[in-house]
Length: 130
Image (cartoon, helix red, strand yellow):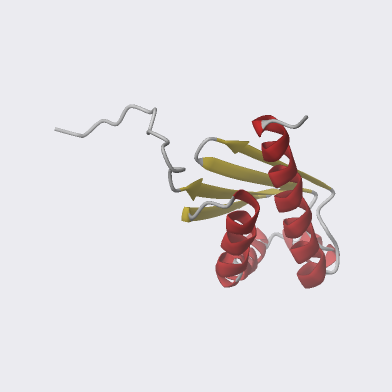
């Protein structure tokens, strides 16, 4: 007897597995740890222990800028693929995709903002600057 939280759990696992598979295909290895959190209109996936031996060498050699630049270029190229993974898993359209990498500890955060589900009202307060 599964409920909505079971569905969200399955969606999170599906997203984590697909992003890990994509990482492995393109970098030759997957992340050490992957966790996806789905909460209302947001999906966030954290990938830890992501850097390849080459990237670690660049970081240790004082060139983290090259690692950030390469990862950003890769994530821009994967935008359509990553959005498709989340839309397929959740059945909802992605409004925005944001991606960030961090060094020390090495991790990436893939952030997806979803369109409201049918019948779902926004429950956050909005403010406007005067």
